[in-house]
Length: 353
Image (cartoon, rainbow, N blue to C red):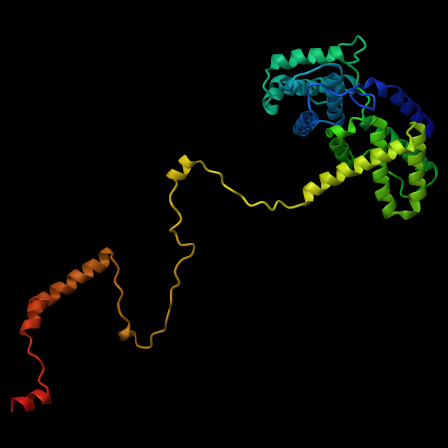
């Protein structure tokens, strides 16, 4: 594919970049909603996207709807969950209207149940109508798809692939974002610290990190790939200082995210119980942690081995049978001891004489 048609698409994206009111250096801060609450809602939308196995465009559109709405309207924290779920349902409708390749649009009742938001399906539809009216819908029932960092990433990768093919660079970069790039871009969009950057700046910074990894694998392509980044930076009118700031922020966010997944959780499991529960628990302080050691010794003469009796029914029956036999032979044990004649020894015979 030629480069010039792709550059025309990039021009249209740059012209529509200003329509996204919640992103960029001129975006006003959202009043009433903290950055942490916004990031939490973005992660909930990402979970919904994974649950329904939807394209990444739906997630980016939903986040853009939230950011644009919060930049224009003052919302209360208790309404944020309803706003987020409504933005997601509206994003599904926007994507279906533009592309038409969704198998099914999630039902409002299912979205409310899965997201565990405290609103009803009717509240979701009512909030969705409010969102559509505040967005740049251009007198349409469903607003068009907004310009997102994913839109820029796709065009920039296509431009780089077309230029690499023309220059006969091997291996050429991918023409479309790979799954790991889509995953990383979603993580960046979920972080509110990236709201102060333009969508093209965020996409180009992520593309630069990918090209740096490819340069490490193929050093001969370093000049060409870094040249593509420089040309795209000039085309998007991004200053060097601004680009370095965005690149540093992107690398820090990705390193933090990757580090959290690699560090093992070393905290010991601690059970926190109330006093009422402790009173009803079985005391375990006197239980022995290990069983007592059993000493096994070899006995040469089996007749010398003492018979160990237990308090079982068989042992009691054997004891009773032994006592009966002794009683039949000569009465009780005490009588046999009294009537038995003591054995005569040489000392007794001499003393008696």
